[in-house]
Length: 257
Image 1: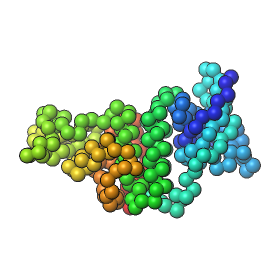
Image 2: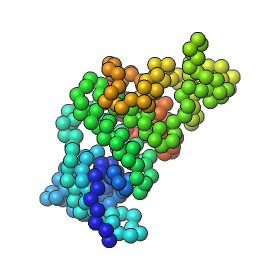
Image 3: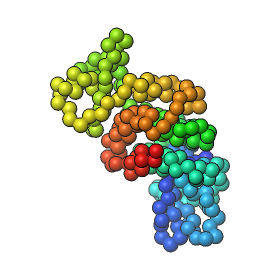
């Protein structure tokens, strides 16, 4: 048995036995783990509010060899999101971050870049900037797909290989569910692609900016639900194809305008 203490984000909790919780949490050093928090649902539990979703904590736990679940001893809150309780859109964004992380991340695989991504977007939610939740969700979705190795080429047609960003003749780009890339208008027509959506030039430019710029340094722009909505649709479809299930937080989030 080895005792550890890790900086972590709480992802999900599930009732277990009488008064216990199964806790899924993302550690900075060991990746995603699951453990049992004994008596966590009882009124006088020592865990308090430390197991709220996406609480940033210092998690103390025991890890037994060849055991899937660790035994959680305690957690110390480093940062909570109580200040966002009155912001429905931000609360939906937190649920989205937690759901994607829970279903997309493999267990026991350290992912320092993903941990830092969560840290950055959560800090942005607390920045107080107008539309911070929409910016955070878009940035998080893009980099989550990128870090998972699921981001297709955004400048080349998947059908014919033509360059979509021709300065003299920029092409419109389209995507559809269960296809990993973008199609030009000619291929969309020639292949008889059915229910497609357009990924606008503005959204493709925004994605390019986000891939090379930290979220705190992005150019100022007015953010609303409609901003880059097509890009978020494209990215969530890539995530859903990978995890083979619909994200239940997406329709709630997109309706939170």
